[in-house]
Image 1 (cartoon, one colour):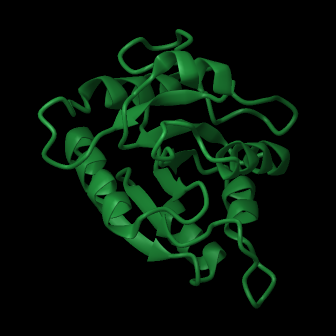
Image 2 (image 1 turned 30 degrees about the vertical axis):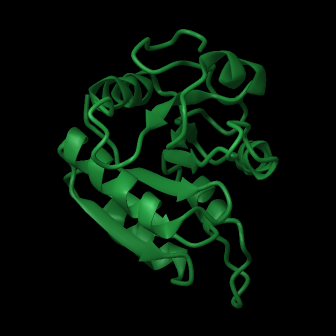
Length: 189
């Protein structure tokens, strides 16, 4: 089965350095080239060029993908129109809770029919019981750069499984995928 491009966006404005490090680590673990593009750029020309590329890439969007651009075009709408599998990255608060912007972003992606592959927690302690209560399609965690516990192989395997199963590639009339946890494809966290 051919591999597809994957777009990485922050759930709201995330710490730039941590987002860049997480994207670098994920691209390296997956063996995909990484590209960074600002949400201020027009989405359609970039996504059209991406669609013409034969080899899959990880495209990281910097900035707020939900923000309306001056020309009226929006990145989330474009990701939905181009059916680009999208991974949402979210940093927890200091107390380990997930800020309200995260489920709001996930709901917006669902309402716009963005092919949401799932969410990845950016740093912090991975607490499966809390993520299960969130009711969001979590795929795992990307820890701080240099953390020896941050083996991204299970996360990459989870993402590959979801892409192969078509999670995030639903026809416009169906909903998002089920919740999962790091290292256990298809299981609830």
